[in-house]
Length: 183
View (cartoon, rainbow, N blue to C red):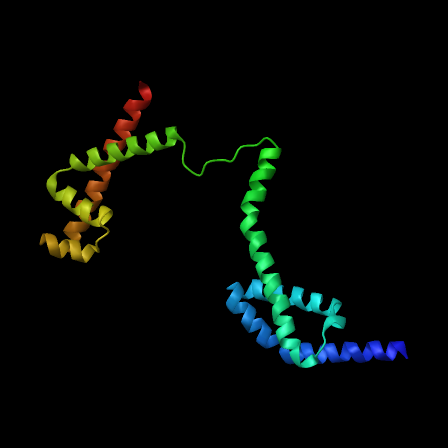
């Protein structure tokens, strides 16, 4: 007799879940903001609801009851996610480790600035026809046909000047880097 009652309760619970889970899922999707979290929340809420099915007083209120459970689960998930960086930080502190900076090292920043200065100097030393093409194509990223039109030259002449400008910049950078490594 007791087994039959449990089967009946389980069947009623399953019927109610099938009837209301989609609307609760849509509600959780709005609250959680993404499908993965909404699915996780709904599954967790269904498990909690199943374990506490004896607390449901009126089957008509099942949807609202399940939504409240899911809402609590969603907010617990958000609190956990918000605290995660702090928990990771405290774990690192307990282990005596430091957090690595996302900023490049001072040496790397200085090397980058030096390289930028060398590049700008190499560009500035280009003869004007080459410099204009190089600046428009490689720095401003203008289309080749547009550069040729703006400078009043053929596309072939623009390509030739760009090729020559790149070669001169490369030679200047190589020379500067080689002379810098000898000191």
